Image (cartoon, rainbow, N blue to C red; front, side):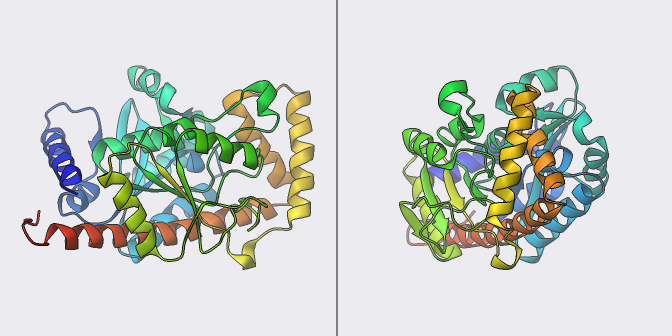
Length: 338
């Protein structure tokens, strides 16, 4: 606990320097800065889902709705993106709209792409790995997304493995998601996360969810039933300085779960089309998600929006519980509140 607050104090000094015109690289919105300074709950949000995950204007509507859910449940949203070469932690309404309109003109930005986008003065929509990186830099321990990247199907041959997984292995941020994207190889993804030393937990279930459906057939080593249990796990991970992330998988709400057979059939067809058109690398996920949405008549997009909102609800409650836990421990015997 002492380690976290010492680190946060250093982060605050950096933020103050930046906000006062000291030439810092990362720009933090006043709302997020104030929340971090007071030890309040903050939830990091990625921006790839805005620019690459949904069409306009649904992407903007969803982004605003997700931020509203986070606020309604007591936390401060911090959407992360790179605009004109500057990384931003917390976007205002104009910046959110700009990103939504840019769509795929904003570069899909993983950790490896950050230096190039910044150096070129470009616009970058951060993926899970890049969002985790920036969140960790400013001291945000909870991050909400839709689905995590992972090992692609036939990854044992192509070696196509998302940097999201290696980021989880080295960055102490808890990721709240609906598991991994359904277009991926879930069993191999879980094996890879184990190799990376990442704690994988499921929320109110013993089975790892499969994004559009509640069940993947894969058991998880850790079940968490309340936001308070999630908070204790995250706090323990930070106190032990394990320096790796945690994945907390939240099943899609039952009423929005799409038909597993219909989705799987669409995925198989989209995968074949991707192979026939040599769509690989970072272009694969946007292509596959778009085709699956087309093939399911929009059912997958509706389910995607529903699960993101549900993740935001759970993530905000977890962030609030974590902030309360830290506050209570910090005010214990022999400790002074910040």
